[in-house]
Amino acid sequence: MKKLLMSALSILVICLGLLYSRNFIDSSNSEDKQTLTIFNWGEYIDPELIKKFEQETGISVIYETFDSNEALLTKVQSGSTPYDIIIPSDYMINKMRKLNLIKKLDHSKLEGLDNIDPQFLDKVFDPGNEYSIPYFWGTLGILYNKTKVPEDLKFDKWNDLWDSRLQNNILAIDGAREMLGLALQSEGRSVNEKNEVSLNLAEKKLELLHPNIKAINSDEKKMLMINNEAWVSVVFSGDAKSIMEENENMVYALPKEGTNLWFDNIVIPKTSKNEEAAYKFINFMLRPENAYKNALYVGYSTPNMPAKAMLPKEIQEDKAFYPDEETLKHLEVYQQLGSKWLGIYNDLYLQVKMYRK
Figure 1 (cartoon, rainbow, N blue to C red):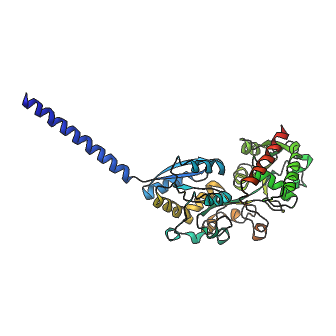
Figure 2: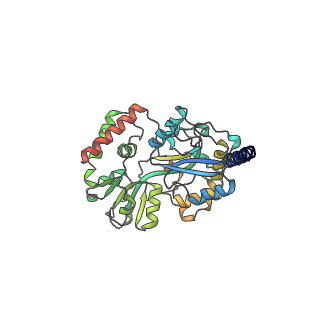
Figure 3: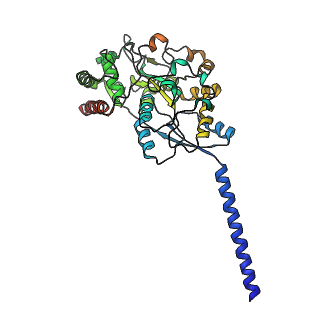
């Protein structure tokens, strides 16, 4: 009986030992395997680059997407996911900086920042690039089908959108800053207007655009334009480029009164648990060959000078996507208006949409 008990005890000790060893090994492997959690816009990076980064570094990437800066802000504020990299737009970077949600960058850990065109550094939303690194930039403009619209319309001014011959043929954007902004600029005002009289006039002018609007931010926007089912679209430059690749009759125009110049930059949120991996990713994306590959895939304008030089000449010289210095002078960056004015913009654009119904 005693021998039986000793045997049973020995087996139990061995089993416990094996269990401990397995847990120890699993724990060690878990600690050794690094992860990088990225929160980005949808279809905003070449998937092959993520694979390449993982292969080069041994770091496993967890990739999530958002569809608006406001959704990004809400998720980061909730702290539910410890993101290591996020890619907000200009005005949101300024807001997140003021809310103490993002980390100040250690420039000594950055490699390749000199690849970025100086004109895209030290912007008003992030002086000295203390918090962010340029990722992509672009414009808001008008995409039109040259075989469908009247020949005299070149959309070199926003007011062309109100031409009665475009009835039920314009696709609008579901964005208060964008749509009120173009109405303001059509009257010589700023996209960052803080005058209620001017804003109310812009709202009334957008109501007059309703007969020409086919849809507001239709999910089928790209397909409608590609298939010639809509003639005109208010669109961001990258989306315009992808449509133009599918339909050779499309032309992208920037109105002379000016338009929105936007930037999406890489930042490290305070939630980051792997700052070392975050810097590795930033440096990886600053490498010209990677920025070039990404620009080809995404379609937006790259701020990386050597990467731009690798692009086909027709893309480099296309002033619709790489405007000259004179055109850039007339473009405006959205400023953080504050909750009061942002609320006014949103309420006015809601009125525009309700009027349409």
